[in-house]
Amino acid sequence: MAVDNMKKKAKRNPGGGRKLSKQDYNLSAILQNQMDAAVVRYSAVDHSSLQTIADELDLNPIKVRKC
Image 1 (cartoon, rainbow, N blue to C red):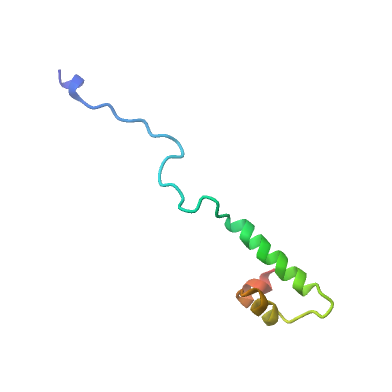
Image 2: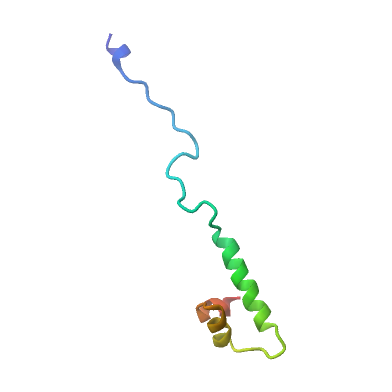
């Protein structure tokens, strides 16, 4: 009958959807590495300026200041 002809709805799987294009990309680990490098450079005896540290690490000076 009409009920038999209706398609059954497929159940959705949890975690389904679009897969990440870079599955091994970890933003928090990259940021932590950058912050650690900035802290090591600033903790040196000569206390380089934040602009110098930013230039050496190729980072934005504001990001270095936040460390």
